[in-house]
Image (cartoon, rainbow, N blue to C red):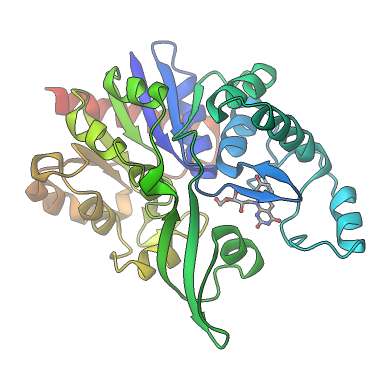
Length: 321
Ligand code: FO1
C-alpha cells in the first residue's frame, strides 16, 4: 500500500517511524521546507533534517532537532568572531549535513536530489520529498515596541521563543513556488494520504501554500486522513497554540479539522483522529462530513507510533468503504 504523508518536523518524524515499520506500506513523506534558512552561508532545512535524522537514528530525541552526540564548538567560535545569528545553534555534526547540502545546491542539484543523496547515508526507510525545490520561507509579522515588522520564522521561534505576538505568517516565495514532480506523483499515486500531527499553520499550512498541492489533495482518489496535533487544546510540542491564535483558528482538535475543511466542502479531510480527551467532538466532525475516531495520540515510544499509524490507516479504510 502506497501511503503519502504531509509532515513537518518532530511530530512528523515520530509518526513516520510508526508507519515505516508496517511491512505492507511504502511511505513517501512530503516535508515542509518553509522553516529553511540560510545562515553563515549554509542552507539549513530543519524539518527535512529532523525527519531524516529521526528515521535514520541520528536525531537528538531530547532536543527534538539536530544530531545526537552533538557539540557546538564551531557555533561558539562563530559567536566569538561576533558573527550574527549565532542564536540559531548549529551543531558541529549537523554542519556536515549543511556543508554537503550547500555544496550540492551550489553545483545545481535540486533540493529533492540533495535530500535523496543525504538519505543514502541515513537510510530512513521512507522517501523524503521536499514540498518544493523552490525557496519558500515562513516569515512572521510581529508587533512590539520596535513597531510592526516581519522576521524569519526561526528568529521568532528560536531567538524570541515565540514570545512576541505574531499577527500573520507569510510564506515568502510560495506564489512563485511549484510542487516537485515527485510530490505531485506521490499525491496522485497514493492509496492513502495522511496529514501528520504537525503544526497546522507553519508546517502543514506551508505545504498547502505551495500552488498545486491543495488542488492535488482535493483531486486525489486516495482518502485523506489527518491526526490532530492538539490534545485537549494543547500542543504536544512546539508552537502550534501560538500559531493558531495568531491566525484566529480555535485551538482545538475540532478547530483544526474545520480549518483544514472536509473534502465534501472543498476542504482537505475525509478523516480525522482526535485524542480520547476530545471524544466529545466526534459528532461535530461527523456533521462536517469527516469520518472521525478517538484514539491515543501521544507517541511516547515506537509502539505508540505504530498503533497511531494503524489507527489512521483503519480510518482511511473506513472512508474507502
Ligand atoms: N531550535 C531551537 O530551539 N534552538 C536552536 O538553536 C535550534 C537550532 C537548529 C539548528 C538546525 C536545525 O535543523 C534545527 C534547529 N532548531 C533549533 C529547531 C528548529 O527551530 C525547529 O526544528 C523547526 O524549525 C521548528 O519545528
